[in-house]
Length: 304
Ligand SMILES: NC(=O)c1ccc[n+]([C@@H]2O[C@H](COP(=O)([O-])OP(=O)(O)OC[C@H]3O[C@@H](n4cnc5c(N)ncnc54)[C@H](OP(=O)(O)O)[C@@H]3O)[C@@H](O)[C@H]2O)c1
Image (cartoon, rainbow, N blue to C red):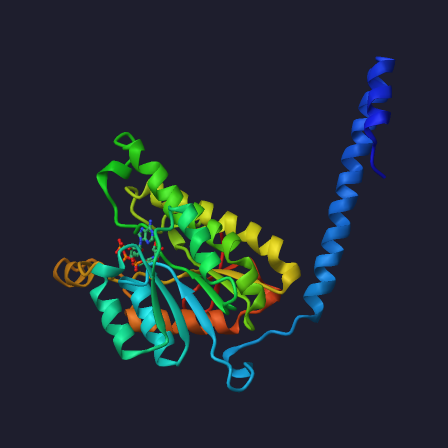
């Protein structure tokens, strides 16, 4: 039951606060009912969507993954491993002309298309989505991000606030915008997965998991998790599975392995090949019943 504008103006004309309050309560409750109806609707759609994995793709179908930040680190290894499996890859990079390693991969694997994308350029995200409007995307892989390396300007009492927006925009807003812009392509894909590479650093449950000088990074990953949970709730009715992944501690900057050995730091480092193979497996195996979950690269679900 909704309240019309006429009923509202009548209540106002009566100058009767009790009537007005009552109307507002009714309006609020009717809003709740509407949301409940939508939730029931969502659940019923979810029940009929079969989970498509790599093993159950239609014969002869070549799946497509879009990977952000594909020019180095985890993104490059994701690209390499999906390419090895014969996938089509829309591999995005901020500066394709400087992405030598990615260009070399694209020469080796014809399924790789390199596209320019800075995830902070929202117009460019829309432009790329329009360019690929007829291309079903099986996995939307939000990997690009500012890394979690500690820096003094992220230490409380020495915070450099000019960095705050960069972390929040790149690590949280960018993936959200990409999920929104590429929704129809993911709906058209067979596998229907949206993924964000997050971090244990964003977890409240594991608050001592990272060095203190990572304030903005951690906040951006917490924000990312909440945004992706919202995307999960909003896209469940389309049969889309949204997950977040913690890749483990991977030495993509090429400094930790050496430091760990020389300084006997006891860091539990994960090999990049293992981390990516593990995450590809988790993405493949996770279905709609677990949408909105964050996983370790090995497959265990983590607490937010
Ligand atoms: N490595 C780890 O141990 C670890 C742990 C937890 C989470 N993660 C997360 O995993 C993801 C990848 O990490 P990584 O270790 O591979 O980092 P990385 O080696 O520093 O690579 C980061 C990638 O993101 C790209 N990028 C940064 N800002 C961007 C922007 N505005 N638009 C588009 N691309 C942008 C970089 O492009 P440029 O080359 O142009 O800078 C690069 O391709 C990140 O989200 C990171 O937070 C990593």
